[in-house]
Length: 197
Image (cartoon, rainbow, N blue to C red; front, side):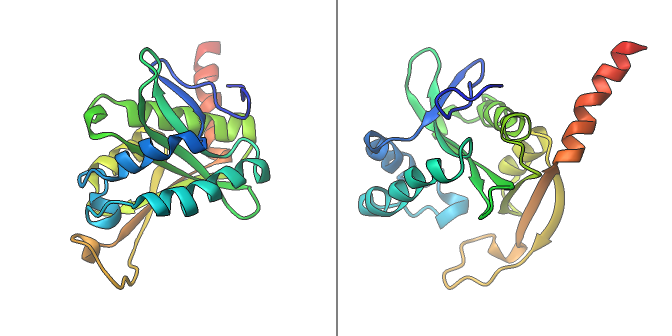
C-alpha cells in the first residue's frame, strides 16, 4: 500500500481520505446517533462547537506532525457517501499508532470496519513503519473486539479506569489489543514460506 497525498489507498469498498473542514456536518451527524456513541459517551452526542472548534482543528494539525498517521474519512467507493472514519492516532513520538473506527449504523454488519482496519494495519507497518498498533474499547463492546481480532490484533489486558460519569458497562473495565511489528513481519513471511514448499 502506498500513501497517496498522505492517504492510504483504501479498500475494495472504501476510499479513505484526509478529513477537511467541510466534514464538520458529517462528523456531527455521525456522533448524533446514540447507538454509535453507546460505548463512547453512553449515547450522548458530540456538539457542533466541540467538533468544529476542538476536535477537527487538532486532527488537521496532526497530519503534518506525523505523516501517514491520523484520521481518515471513510467514503463509499461507489457512491462517495460519507460512512464514518478510521484512525491511526499517533503516539507522541509517532512510533506507535492507536487503531480506531467509527461508522454509521447503516453500515454495520457488512464487514467494513474490519476491511478498513486491516488496510490501516497494513499501512501502519508496511508504509509508515510503526513498531506497534494497539486499540482499546470497553470490555462489553463485543462488536469492536471482534473487529480488533479480525484485523490481526490480539488481546493484551483488561484494566479499570475511574470516571466521573461512568456509563453502563464501565464496571467490566476496558480492554487493550495490540499487534507488534515483529509479529506482523512474521505473519507476512509465513504464507511465502508455505508457497515455497
